[in-house]
Image (cartoon, rainbow, N blue to C red; front, side):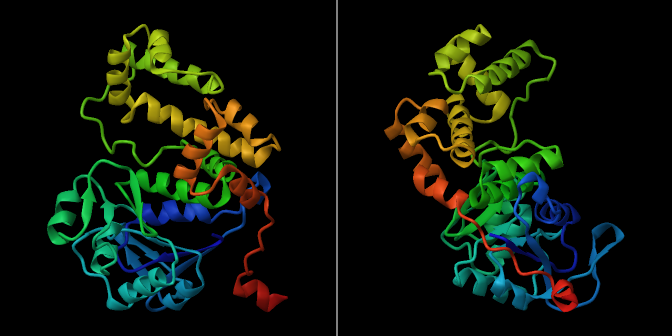
Length: 331
């Protein structure tokens, strides 16, 4: 996943465009991040107007989607606005060839207009979810997750969850260390699973003693992932009953203690597989899994590869992307 195409058209959201560009645009090779070739693909050449008085210059036509490893679709400022048929046709063709397509926020409406989401799970900003479901009743619209995947089509919730999805796609293709390096440069959190809640019904003030206790528990748990942690153990650290702790934890994070622990243990295991030559049983132990069998089951279910296959893929030398036209012409 080195060649990334942004589908650009008039009045796409500047924030979505900035997120995509920040994740895949800069050269972070010194930090161990692969070099990406990011292209802005449009129906026609020439300046494209964006909200807020900005303009964008595309550098490729839609035919470049045929060479891309990943296609990313920013949302329109007005989700109800139509998308030109050539754009929809290019998306359908890319999907037909098996290219992963990721739509940020209301970009789900564009995939829906192309007919790609019929019969599939999808998510968008919680405020727009009822509209997406009403306009396209064939889509299984979910309101809670930050991002979901179905049949090679990724959709994400509002605003910042687009960052989460983009980092997740980097993590899937290039490993946890590459995603963490990008996250550090962006000064954002490196790991939020898709099943985090989009918003919290009862947000806990940061200064509240319960919130402080929970934050301390999470920090301590991250330092102790190799230990056999349980909800009861973590509840004891917070001075709460397990039932009360689980309720407060879900209110503060949008997920359960078990899922939170599992997500961070899998992330730790990815890093161990990428950075070390520890045998798989030792990786399982250091990441805090009760057994190698349990580790293999969870890892394969969440990552799509077994631990050994993941290590082999992350260590395999990748071919460098084709240089931009300007470099080829000057050589």
